[in-house]
Length: 353
Image 1 (cartoon, helix red, strand yellow):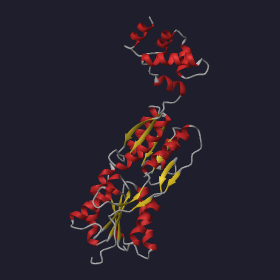
Image 2: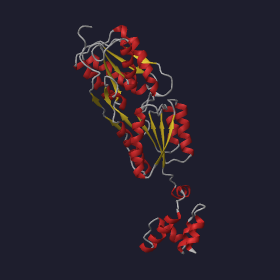
Image 3: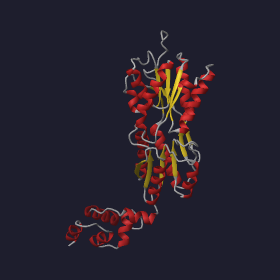
Image 4: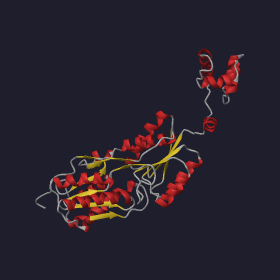
C-alpha cells in the first residue's frame, strides 16, 4: 500500500501531506523531520527524510520565502556582459553568494541610468533580498529614492559624477592606480605622455586623469591639454571602447607622444590596433599602458602593461558586505588598492624619434 502511494505521487508535485501519509506520521512531524528538528527522534527523522527523497520531494521555495520573509535571491545589475571586467566581478559575487545559499539574478543596463533604475525596481518587485550594482550611473538625486526603498544595495565602482559614497560601496582607488601607471612611464624616461579617457564614466575618468596631471607636474612637466583625448562615448557596452581607443590614438599621433596612458584596457587595445595600422612598433615607437588587467590584456601582441584591479575581490567584497547588511550588521564602505602588472607594451622612449 505504501509503495502504491509513492508511485501514484510521482505524477504530480509531492507535498508534505503525501509524505505524512506514506510515513504514517503527522504533518508537523514531517515538517520537523525535514528541518532536522531535535524535537523528534533521529530514527524518525531519518525514515521521513528517506521517504521524502524516494518520493522526489522538492521544498516549495515560494512558501518558504513567505514564511521566512526571505527569497534567498540577489539582484546583480551590470553595465554589460560583453566586457571581461564585469564577468570577473560577477564571478566573485557568485562565488561568495553560492555557499551562503543565495541565487543571483543578472540584469544588463548598457550604461543607461534609467535602465539601471528600472532594473532595480524590477528586482524590488520580485522581492530579492538585496541588490549589487556594478559601475552605477545613478546620480545623487536618484540615490535618495533608492534609500527610501529600504532594500540593501551595495555599489561596486560607481561611475556617477558623485562617486559611490552616498550608498554602501566598494571602490577601486582610481587615483592610486593611475599614479602607478604614470610613475612607471616617467621612471623609464617618458616625458611626452598622452592620456586617453572616456566620457561616460565621469567619476573614475576624472580621478585617473587627475593623477595623470599631478604626476606630470610632480616630475616638472607642464601638462599639454592637447595630449588629453576624452572620447565622447554614447551610453552603451564598454566593449565599444576598442574603436574609441583607435580613433583617439589617430588624433594624438601628429603630436608625437612617446607613451599613452589609457583609461582602461579596451581603449589601450584599440590604441594598439591603431598604432599597428600606422606602422608603429609598440613599445619601440610608442609605449601603452591600460587599466583593469582583463584576461585579454595578456594575450594581445605585445602583452599589455596595465593597472590590475582585484576584480574577483571586488565582487567577493560586495557580496560579503551585502550579506552583512542582510544580517543587520554594520558595514563600512571600502576602497581597494590596485597593482601594476608590467608586460611588453612599455619600454624606454625611442631616442631616434
